[in-house]
Image 1: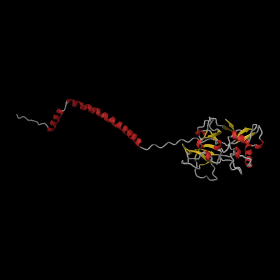
Image 2: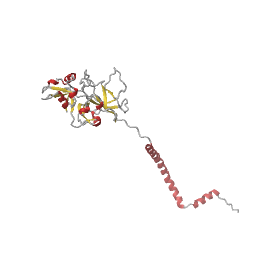
Image 3: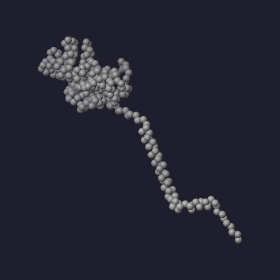
Image 4: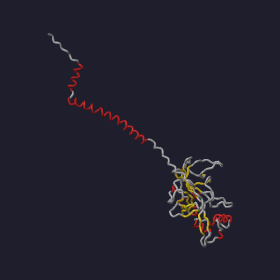
Length: 311
């Protein structure tokens, strides 16, 4: 009987030879590696989606431009405006007008500003204090006003160009004659300014403001100017606003109102309720800077008597 031989496929023989040549330990390791590779790939892919963008953003922030500055929130608008006014003084034995003004109001040049050489100046002083300087008697009540007074304020810029004569503004008009800072609509201005003085015929340097004048629409000349958070070191100092006697007097009187939108900005240690109208003395320092020192005179406005009372 003839024997029949079935020749194996050459390809199958090659695979069998290859398998026999592999170490048996490797054959056991391959399934284990396969089982571990699937979850490792899954978790690695998801982690990469979070890690790589974060790393990219980190280096982008290092090399990119800084973020834009966050604007400072504007303070609340004040509920009241500073009030020009006077304070009361009772004449003592031996007092003279020049002495009273020099001591009580720190007006060193009182004898020069109000002089018998110019009778119109003495007449204006008599009208201001409600007494005749040549006939003072102990016990007389005088109304004393701050000379060349300043005003401290803060407010939002509503309009920059010239206003129309018929236009009514709820706040004073501020004239900034010199500043290197950009002033834009909606900027917040911090400043001191020279309060408009009462016009007296033949007395151009009359030093007192009209206590009955309203601040609405009043034109003020600014000094010690700050726009938003930047102080203009090149702006006019208050002793450069003429006429005034700041340098000779060693300081200046200032009307203001307490609160975050006014005097609190200058951090004066007044410890008064917000919205209190005050009159205070600022001492002149170097370069014409004005500062409030502890112990300086402070007065608050009394709504009933319409005069300033010492705090």
